[in-house]
Length: 160
Ligand code: ADP
Image (cartoon, rainbow, N blue to C red; front, side):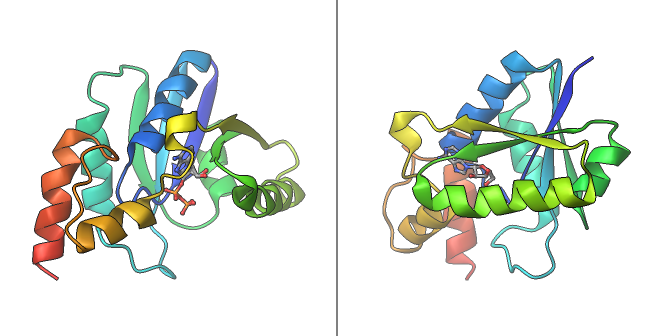
């Protein structure tokens, strides 16, 4: 069975992420979404909230599961018995960082490979940061995130 991990912050999940997940789920038998519980970043949503939002949004896709993880991605991959990591590429600006991450992961775990899926054109400028910035200033974000995330974002912003 081919299994791949799609790791990220997903703070919150956007339609760009969703597009990559749907496409990856057609390539692999099973895709594990790894929600990074990164102590060096201060996310808007807790890792539990991010996991639950992804589970809600992905409930119709049978071969995708969602989990949070701490520490090194390659250790999480080993724990899940896979050596395939999926990342999405938007613009050239993603390339440097993604390349560096893929190479450094291979330095510590040579059997782990990263597969890049290129963004769909309509999502090429979409990121969780942009969505958060828009929501903060009252811009309607329904074109950028799944419907159920819109109200969660607005509630979060009100609470801030
Ligand atoms: P990270 O903090 O690890 O970059 P993100 O949640 O921002 O986590 O992104 C997770 C992955 O999804 C990354 O590979 C990122 O490049 C990719 N990604 C984010 N937004 C898009 C998009 N609009 N189209 C394609 N890939 C995307």
